[in-house]
Image 1 (tube, rainbow, N blue to C red):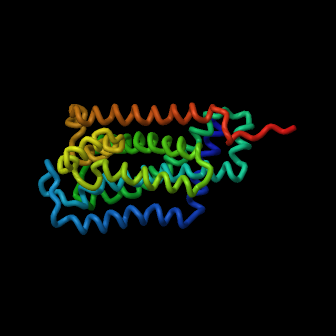
Image 2 (spheres, helix red, strand yellow):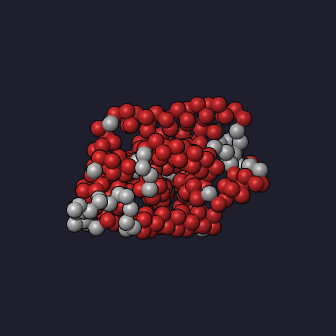
Image 3 (tube, rainbow, N blue to C red):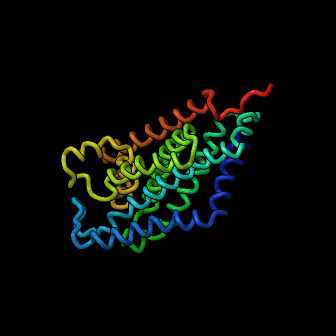
Length: 262
């Protein structure tokens, strides 16, 4: 099982870095969002509870979340490609348990998103933030939890899709609103009541709390903050739930399995 997991994870990473357009696009898109929106809203933005915070600083945790969310989910599109190329059928009939397919694909896609997030974290000192080492560990933990939950969700959706075009269509309609209604673009407190209610039940909102608060509060404050602890519990429950659903889904007989030969 470990050999299959490592092989599938390495394959995801090798495939990503060999496709230069994917590397450039995955870095350029968040940079463009950050620069353009950060510059456009800085003059009129004021974050509740964070006096003097520029929009670029406020938006930065949302960019980190965008990187792990979009990269992790869209990396699972390789599930569809591997099915169409016959590789997935070969893995399914191998001695490796089916669990190795889920974990190998999810870990590989997570690693792609986390590597990109680490690259963007190099900008933290230039934004005037000075998180402690413990806070950086909490930030990384939040990124891992967020990446796990939404990469598993991407796998779950991709497993039931027949074409990459259909996957892109569903994720564009489904994924972008999840991110936009997480508090990444604007504070939840400034939203209308009906919109705030939607944001409260959005799992991406709770993942964002795990990324944003370690950049502005000490570890001692965070570990005593009920909002942070609640968000952590919800994000972990979401991640575990999505992973279990993905494991359950792959154990069912479906069109991914090779047809019996006569």
